Length: 182
Image (tube, rainbow, N blue to C red; front, side, top):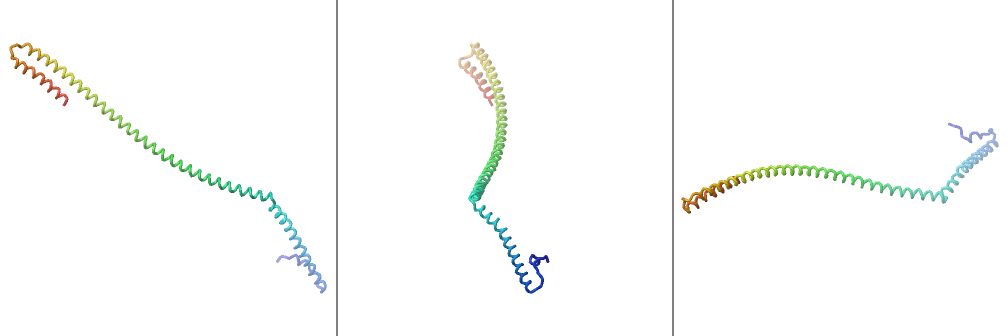
């Protein structure tokens, strides 16, 4: 065990010396205790005075105000980040929708082009049929004209026969046109 301070205050073993030594040791220990209390108490008092000063109180108020402002700013930042994430999610959704709509539009355009090509082909076919029918009508008109001229040349036929002879070219013309249209 380490020696303690009052162990060094021992005096010779006499009766009177023993009491004086104990008093002297108690005095030294008391002085040292008082010195320790004063040495620790003075800075404590100084710190208390400084801590309770108006400048220190102002500093504490400023620190608390800064903490409050920082907390509010952190909340606003978190809210802004949530809004940003929501906006990003909406942007992704919008981009996907645009891509789907563009693909649908391209498909519709392709289908429209195909339909236009089919209709153009059908129009070309119908134009050829119309040209063929016009040529057939023209041919039948010429034949009708030739037949009418022949009928007019023949005077020997009766008026009833001539009207019957005029009907067959007209009948042929109508039959030819109906066959072409079918």
